[in-house]
Length: 174
Image (cartoon, rainbow, N blue to C red; front, side):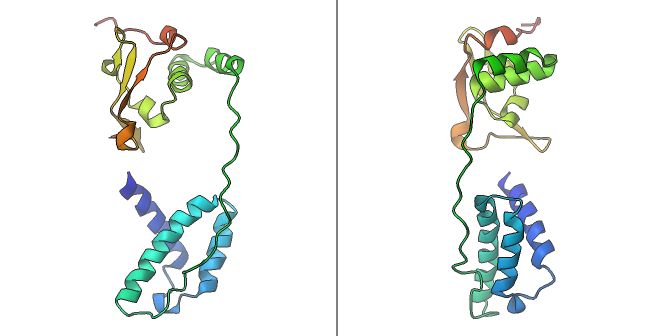
C-alpha cells in the first residue's frame, strides 16, 4: 500500500517538476507548487509530497549534481485537523435503517465497530465468531486488492456490540 501511495505521489511530482532539470529547479518553483497544492490538500498531505522532493534533492546533493538544497526550510502552515462532530445515535439509526441490505450491513459494522472501510470490505463470515461475539480483522481491500490492514496493530479482534448483533446474519451452511 505504501508503494502504491508513493508511486502516485511521484507521478504527481513528475507532472509538476518533471520538465525541470534538477540543477535548474528554484525555490520559487517549489513554493508556487506548494501554494497551488494547499488550495486542495491539507498541509499534512503537502508535507508528505514535499518529503519526496527533499529525498530527490538529497540524492542530487550526494551525487554533486547540485550544491544547495532549494527545498530546505520551506515552511508550511500548521496543520489543524477539523473537529469531528460524530453522528448522534438517532442519526446512526436513521442512516442504517434507510440503507439497502448490503449497505445497511456495511454501515452497521462501521458505526458499531469503528473498522475502516477496507477492513469492512475485506471481512468474510469466517471472521465472525458468533459464540465469542467477536470479529477478527485480518485483511483489507484497498484499490480492489486484498491486502493486510493499515498497520500491524490493525490486525485485531473487535467485540460485537448488542446494537450490531441484529444486523449480522449467521450463514445457513454453518
